Amino acid sequence: MKQMTRMMAVFVVIGIMLPCMAEESGGEVRLVLKIDSGTVVNDPKELIELVGAFGSQEDSLKYDVRVDNASFRDSPYSLSVFIEEISPEADASAFAQGLVNYMEQTMVTYYLQTRERLDTQLHTLLSQKQKVHGQLKSLRAEATGASKISPVVQVQLNEVIDLQDLTPELPAAAAFELLRDSLSPPLNIVVLWKDLFENAEIEPTTPIDMDGVSVASVGTALDVLLKALGGGFYELAYTVQDSVIVVGTEETQRASLSDALLDLASAEYTSTADINQHRRELINEIDNLEMDISRQQSSRSAVQREISQIQSRIKEALANDPVLTDFESLVAVMQENLESVKDQNPHEYVSAMERMVSLRMKVAEHKARLIGQAGGEELAKINEEMFFSGGKLAGDTAELLSLKRQLARVEKELAQSVRLRSTVNEIKISEEALADIDMKIVRIQSLFAGLEQPSVVCVGL
Image 1 (cartoon, rainbow, N blue to C red):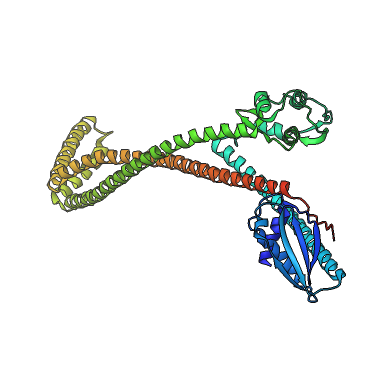
Image 2 (cartoon, helix red, strand yellow; image 1 turned 180 degrees about the vertical axis):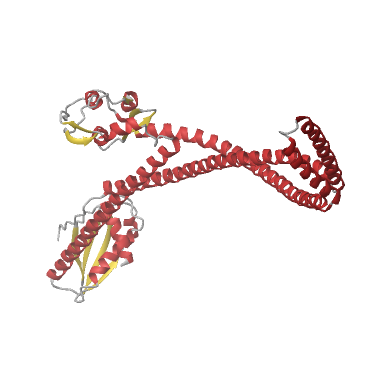
C-alpha cells in the first residue's frame, strides 16, 4: 500500500493518457501500455506495482510484467504485460479493460482525496495566518505605542454610521471622503495614494467594488472598505499615528513599523543597560545608607541608656541631700511668711522678698553643684551630641525615603523596558511564523495549480 501511495502521487501530478494495444504471440497475449507523463517521474518502475495490484485479483489468469528499460528514459513511458496460457480473446480484453478501469478509479479517488486534503490544509493555513497576523498587529501597536489611540479617535472609530450611499462604481477617493464626512467633527484620515498606486495598483478613481453599509461602526466600515479595495490580491491596512488615521498597504505600514521597532529596540537596549546601572547604584546607596542609619540608631539607643542612668543619679542625689532638703523647707516657710506680710507691712514685704530671692539663688547654686557632681556636665554634653545626631538621623531617613522612591520609579521603567524587549522578540517570532505560513500557502497553491483529474482511454483492443 505504501508503494501504491507513492505511485499514485505520480499519477495525480502528471495526468495520464493510456492507449492500450493487445498482440497475440504464440501462447501469450501482450498488452502494451503507453503512459503519457507531463513531468519526470522519480521512479517510473513503480507504475508496475499498480498493474501487479490489479493482477493479483485475477486468479484465473497467469501474467507476467516485463519492462523495456530503454522505454523509461523519457515520457511517454511504455511497459508490456504478458498474459500467459490464455486462448479466448475475450479474457485478454476483459483483463485490459479491467486494468484500465482499476487504474482510473484508483487515481481519480486519490486525486479527489488529495484535492480535499490540500483544500483543508489551505483553509487551516489561512486561518493560522489571520490569527498570527492579528497577534502581530497588536504586538507592533503595543511596542510602538500605536495601541494608545487617543480617546477622540477611539470614540470616532466606535461611532455607528450609515454608509448606504456607497456603491460598487464609487471611486475610492469619493468613498474615503464620504467616510471622512460621516462624522462631526470630520474623521482625521490620510490616504497614502502613492503607496496604494505603486504597491496595490489602486488609484483615487479605482471603483471600490462594494455595496453600501447601513449600520456599522466607523472602524468596521473602514476595514470592509480596505478589504474590498484590495480585492483579495492586496492587503491594505490603517494605523493611528498622533490622532491621525493613516491608510496604506500593509507591507508599507509593516516596513515603517519594523524600522521604528529596530530603532526602538536599539534605543531600549542602551536604555535598559543604563537603567540597570542606575538601579544598581541606587541599591548600593540605599544599602549603605540603611547600614549607617542602623548604626546611628544603635548608638543613640546606647546613649539614651547612658542618659537615663545619669538622670537617675542626679535624681537620687537631689532626693538624698539633707542640705537641699533644709533649703527647700526654709523656702517653704519664708513663702508662707511672705504672703502674710504682703498686705500688712509693705516695707517688711520687700525685705522678705529680697531674702527669699537670695535663698532661692543659694538653693539653685546648691542644686547645680549636686547635679554637676552626679554627672550634669556630662549629661549636657551628651544632650548636645544627641541633638546634632538627631538632625543627621532625620536627614538620612528623609534621604533614604527619597532614594527608595527613585528606586521604585527606576524599577518600573526597567520593567517597561524589559516588557518592550520581550514584545520585540515576540514580534520577530511572529514575523518568522507568518513568513513560514506564507511559504506553505504558496506551496499548497502551487500543488493546487498542478492538479489535473486523470483519465484513462483504451484504444486498439
